[in-house]
Length: 111
Image (cartoon, rainbow, N blue to C red; front, side, top):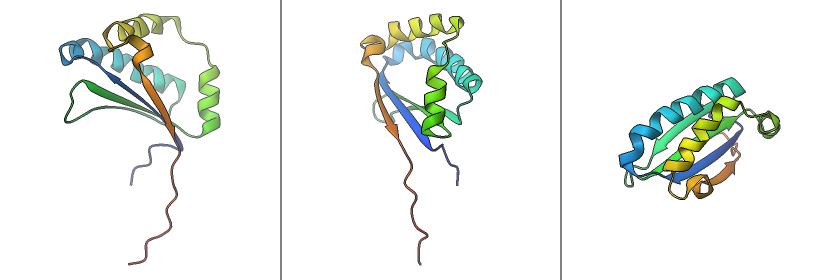
């Protein structure tokens, strides 16, 4: 089974489906940027029933990994990406909701 990471941050926001052709290239750049930062995984999901809702999962090896990544200076070339996201996300970047998750280690099942 695939393990996403030991600390996952979810970003949930709404984008008009008409703007999705502008969104996908920005998220492709974001994916490459998170890879550069050393994230364990980066995934983008769209709500199956509400195409306006987009969810990003940023996975880290640990909470301390997330802390270290957060202290790194932002690359100047990311500024146009964040500006583009701010324009097309409903409510701008302030409209993004975020949550953090840690995994639950379940006991072995007895069948």
